[in-house]
Image (cartoon, rainbow, N blue to C red; front, side):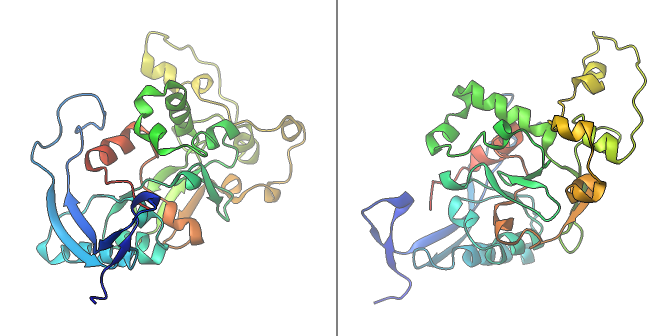
Length: 300
């Protein structure tokens, strides 16, 4: 008997299929150059193109086989970019898939099993890992749990679920922002959403810790959408407890991301939950722009 064959159970099916498991490497285009899922034509009209294939026993070496296929492209000099992976790869240990894929220059776009959606853990800096993106420690609970227990049908039919779409949109200001792209070691710099010249949230804790002076009132042209959106009053407030507002604790008792608003995330820094980290915010338009055209079949 050939050792690379076995029983394959697709998506938790009770009836298996005996044979090889194939890891396919496919090139695909995004929906639209500006990232909007509903506007314009696809970037390219060519069909999806298979670039690599690896056969193995079902459920064996899933991540290493994917990395092996990617490695074979290196001598060809093909550009690296977004890497869309199915859930069988998402569930691999980070050293088996995510870390080597990033080292090859790819940015990961991932989906999750139902039990892995929502809050996936936290870091030593205090930042929360919410659907693969690091977020403010005080992100509102309703936003953190927006996808908790969400089933696959709801993910596929997101466009028809306006309440969920609204929660996904409301999450965006609370995610840490990329300050510096990956260096040669794969380390990135992320910034507190209340920090910098263009903060996306209004945070009383940040203002207290960093002695940010109160902004002086300035007239706003309400007919100018950009100026209105940039005003402090238009930014969502971070829900700091009233007791903390009245009696701010010492800075060294706060999460590290609140003490020093920029953190460095290196490959493997997140430990076991590093396998969930991805490079676009889950289910938002930019994620859908990349994931939907190349959407792999549900696995794992």
